[in-house]
Image (tube, rainbow, N blue to C red; front, top):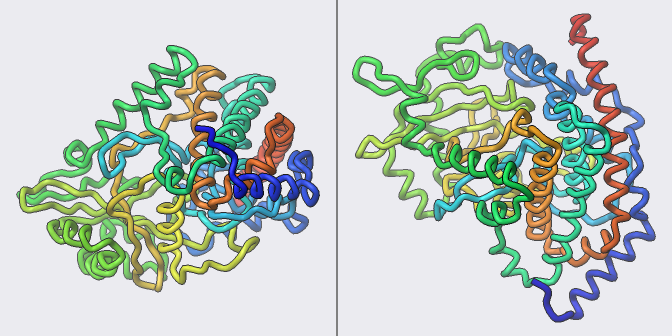
Length: 460
């Protein structure tokens, strides 16, 4: 991948190295906390404006472990990162780049790719915030799996080293080459460190290939009086009219009438955010049913619907309509420039991913809420924490995530040479991030203790 040196490359490297004067790489080890941080106040703020009847479920999922708590409260680390060192290189970032927000999915050409798969918090901000969130998540994952401290540190060390080396490579290629770069399944398989990791990858790929629209149909639907409908499985998925007790007063529109009356205007507005050829494709499907779907950890309590559509051969298309709230990074960076939070998510995803869902778009709903739309589980698969049976498997997955993150940052910012110049070629930056990740993981565990104690006292 190396290319003959170019003045622009040299200028970028020099600019990145100059950034070290303002923010030395060793400062990235500092674990700084926001002077105004209040964990319980942030929890209440994060729960505000969610579906009232689902807040308890959200806390229940976060209570599972410090890692689950970390996943559900990106807001806390965002505030702390904003109070810490900053290289001054800002670009479109994921905003919530923890370990479980990466996985396999299908490209429009139906090739299996590995990439970031969650962009709810995407925003313009310091690139290192993504890397630090990923690094901390690896330490927390290692602790949850019972791996020793040395293994956790080594996993982060290898992760950051992979990011650094990949960024050095991306700094030397053209913007068009970079735009076409992707991390494919075969590439990861070729670089598997051992047979165990290779078998885990093959198993995950098989799972992804079985997550097609056709194979989802019998899993998610039932016949009701001769008509196909989504199958209720509360509290994960349910028809809105059947769960009136979930909604607060501000959710009255979700519990009355027919779901079609709610969804059709939203689909019509969404249609106009697609490219013209994809509008034509969408027009070949009819809406059959819609239901509320609870997703993830951090998203529990936000409004999320799953929609079943069918074409004239009665073949399915499952779309997910998910509420887009203000990014947790926005209070510490700059106001959203897109005028719509759903559009913000779509823009960030299209810019950072190597290839995005052909049905990715945005819309608005009652109460002036913003949403984005995507396919549901289109060849999507990601490992569970339990699948990391050894420190080697966790380390290998962390390196894959780092590779995908480096590619996403290089593409989104167009400043790979500057990033490479700041990071350098030694392991000084790797050591700094490993130190930060260990210290901040300790802080997450303290915050988790505050959270669980407040739950026990019914203070939340």
